[in-house]
Amino acid sequence: MADEELAAIRAKRMQEIQSQYGGQNPAQMQQQQEAMQREAEMRNSMLSQILEQGARARLNSIALVKPEKAKMMESMLIQMARSGQIAGKLSESQLVSLLQDMSERTQKKTKVKFNRKRLDDEDDDD
Image 1 (cartoon, rainbow, N blue to C red):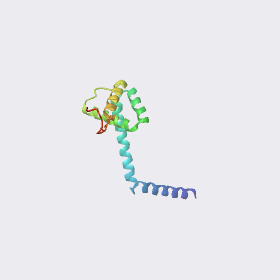
Image 2: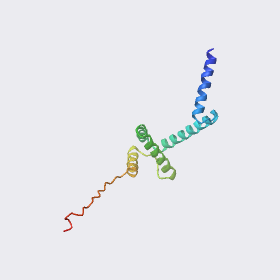
Image 3: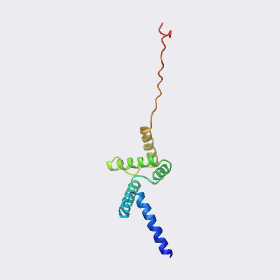
Image 4: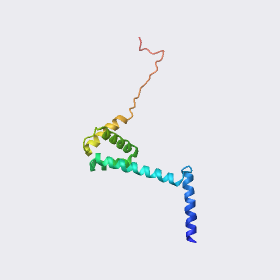
């Protein structure tokens, strides 16, 4: 009796998952998950080759607070390594300087401009 209930629960859950992902079959979902996992493993192995342990720890702590900034930095580091701009492993201080450069480039600069209207009866022109 318990096996039949368990099978019914599994079938119901599978239908819910399929409806969530637009009716994709489980094989396609599994392939997508495996592809994402391989990409993450490749990304982590490249970063471990590029960064020293302290720099990697700093990047991981940034990922906890601002995941989009960490992803952008990881992509930038991988691109720099592929183009040959990084020779050897980066230390934590070098990573900090790269982070500062990146934040300066991506920082939005705001300017406040005052437009003062002149009245016709002002005596400044006299």
